[in-house]
Image 1: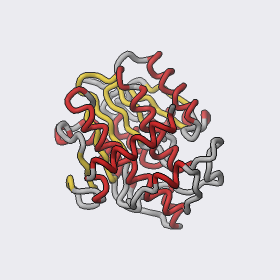
Image 2: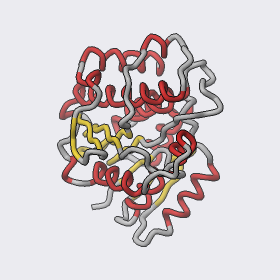
Image 3: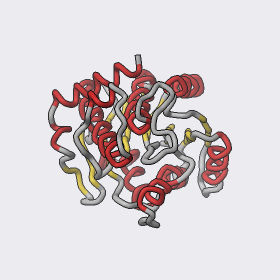
Length: 265
């Protein structure tokens, strides 16, 4: 049975490779990108995969929360039911480290936007829907006060904090929704894959992107992840494991979600 699957940040890197891998199984794909030109090019590349099903494209700048809301509205207008949301889009370094409202762009794109998109689509998730959140092995304690006070963070600090914050809200939202919500899992796709982000951040070619695409495809579709809600999968270790200890603290997780909720009001 084919599914309807959203992939954010699908114009290059792991997102594009995941789209190509999933397309081969004939699923309906909703590809998101920040650039209209790039997302159309990505759709053309994915459509060329043998067995590819219907491909739809959506443009939105995830650092602008009004555009995230509009993205959700467009998707809900086009589709009654969503089976999988892969929150893949992410930022490490950017020429604009703060968004128009003065908040750190990495936190907005990597944490707030996927939360807002997930919550906005909640009523449209199918009975066995899945939300796959792209985490990272790079995780460090979240300075919630600094985020809300519009403090400036270095690239490394913002990225590592944002990936832990994403993991934390994944755990907390899964706990809040229980069996009434979609399966929500945080996944480290593997370290130093050959994405544009890794090349820009570390000046390294990186490893085969298909390593990350494979685990995201499995998280989206395989029976292996059917009961994975509220868990963390580390593809460096090839197993479900414990994230940073802060993500195991319900009070800290709730504090992160409360901060995110403040930013999306």
